[in-house]
Image (cartoon, rainbow, N blue to C red; front, top):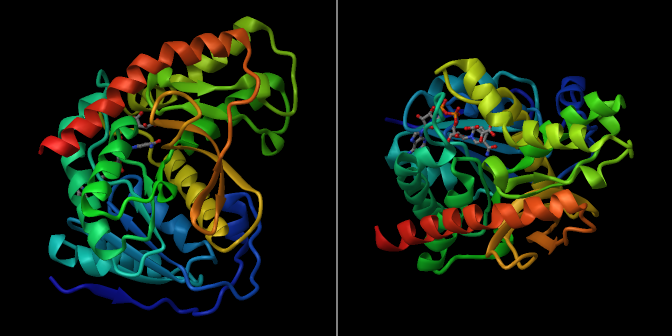
Length: 347
Ligand SMILES: NC(=O)c1ccc[n+]([C@@H]2O[C@H](COP(=O)([O-])OP(=O)(O)OC[C@H]3O[C@@H](n4cnc5c(N)ncnc54)[C@H](O)[C@@H]3O)[C@@H](O)[C@H]2O)c1
Ligand SMILES: O=C(O)C[C@H](O)C(=O)O
């Protein structure tokens, strides 16, 4: 099948008010460097709204939409939005190289989602192979790109990607990110509700990993400060940890979070692009190679810069409840990381 290349109407950066509205941030319309973003799994539940949100980002000059099928339609549709990025759709493995070439950021929401009753680890058998083959192609066609891994189980797919890149000789720990932004988005929303403060000004770091108890929101560091009682903090922590399951159950077999994930993925990609462009003080929580704990990968606040990770920030002061949560999450996170590493090296 031939690649569908769709040129968007506007070549120069503009700042549609819808972009500000959707991403909750304002962008400069000053001339920005050329930046190519590729989305792998672009025709999926996350992929489609994520493609739209990334198309709205004026930091993006080229948007490459790849999936095993159905991307020509998504690309044609998204390309009609009057924002800067030129859109190209690619379908099928033989077009993956073209989709990836020259990418600055590759976002991966490819793979199957959960159904009620499943854990994220239940997705491993299918998604590990998908992620592995996509990462082999990334190593070949755009080894310098920042990789934003959304596919679950993130606690294992990120280590898989690292091992694939190591084998290919392209691994740079500064360029591989597990996207845990949805945990932060949820923690902010739930905290604002309980603290009765405007959500726009709320910050809550979320550390650890991206599954159940490995998701550790640090409400003791939430701002603005609100002296919430212990039982409320415990309930907020549990709701953040179970946020994905809440959506899976509500969707009743029709998949997991897609719209909130697309929003979170777009925010995180925007942070990566700003870092690449040299915007100072871009700090977000993400699952990266880390020495913050004894585990080789861990989510914490990370300063993003021109080469990806500029600095992995420490955890800061923890409450006793958070210290206990930190110790409790380590065995599960360790075993998910090891499972990913083992898979990548034996298959
Ligand atoms: N990190 C997070 O916070 C987070 C949040 C929500 C969902 N997820 C995960 O994201 C993944 C995608 O979820 P979804 O709801 O979009 O699923 P979906 O089934 O709606 O879409 C997945 C897409 O991936 C495509 N795909 C499958 N194999 C592929 C391959 N080899 N190359 C390219 N594309 C391929 C499919 O064709 C499909 O279009 C799931 O693993 C889900 O668990 C992660
Ligand atoms: O819960 C899921 O399976 C999807 C995702 O990881 C989420 O947190 O919503």
